[in-house]
Image (cartoon, rainbow, N blue to C red; front, side):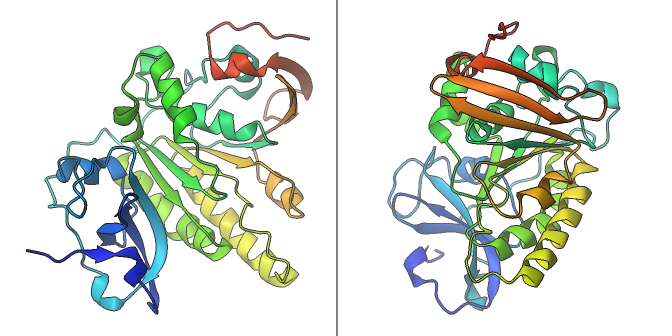
Length: 315
């Protein structure tokens, strides 16, 4: 029987790998070069951690961290035959109806389609990214993409409780919905650039993901000793990676808090929206769009948290 590894044993490794672990006991479930959906791992382990015996639903994590060389083959979950995947490349008409199900945002963001980079600025952007990650799983006839979602958490802002609330509002099992989201958290700017530039395109192709969310894109670019030249180098690599990914899928990035490099990143966006909060009200500023002129509108935040088609914009 394969021995178990635990996160606290990881030290001195020179190679970074994707490490999947039980958040209850830190038992490492899988180590690999590829970024894969957590739901596949949970299914192959019958939903139970082999280390502590607790359920893995909502209790699994994926981290990109250095590991010892002899850990590169750890895999407690038996591999299964890959399920048939939908065609990777589909006509643009199959994407144009994707919506957030919330009229004040849809009116400024549409069309939400591959080849587009949508950047959301401000504290309200995190909630919108969670909504998009959920909505992408819905069938096409309900305004979704019927798709797995790749969610890169750059600033520890992923909110599974908010995501679960969206699922419940639509009568879906939150755990089943979460299994269609491959969530990977990064802790340094170097990990983020490596993930985006090296791993995201293969992951999109492997799982025919139609939506990629990079939450708090500059959340790790806050080190005071960061040299300007090094920052430019990293941002260049990040831009190239994002450009490659958006050729395969719709990409949504968020800038949840102010950063000195915001201006460089917002220049990449095809659609740029600022979301400002004032109590229970949110202000939407469309700053950039391929076909629309800049505009300003507002809505109640509780309307977003309970999305309803045809919601009325408030002034």
